[in-house]
Length: 208
Image 1 (cartoon, rainbow, N blue to C red):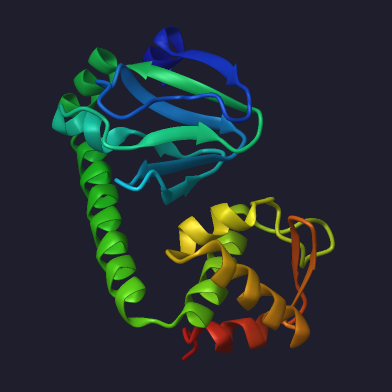
Image 2 (tube, rainbow, N blue to C red; image 1 turned 180 degrees about the vertical axis):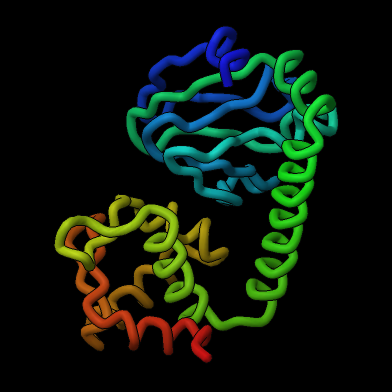
């Protein structure tokens, strides 16, 4: 930690400012000190597909750094965020000299692969209702809730939600309205409150 503290650089990125982009070689390991970041790809049709959300304490861009490849996705803050960068040479040197860190990174990469495989299966087999409900639960798990204990501590546009769910914006809007009609959630603009967590878990079809 002393070595990292001596070489890392930190700066504030404004909402929407590019942290890294496709085809760029990683300059090091990015760490989210504060804020919220989305990692996304862009399809041939120009549509954005969010592949991961990051929060305070998360690291991003590590797969390309370890493999030596260019980035295959973009990283952009969803709000003003403080991002730190550990230089590539420093991180790789620590990685090769620390069996514990190497094991942790392998575990992290394995978890990412498992998550990606599960996401592919869900997008192919689960109906939109279940995917929307599961996405809301994922956002709650990732970013938590506000002091009221129910309002998601993140604001996303319907288009951003759609890229997480893997469907059209119109479909997400219809399903959110239906969940609101059922009093499972409540919405005010981009603010979403989970008013009935049990019903949302049932809708997501992930209960025991």
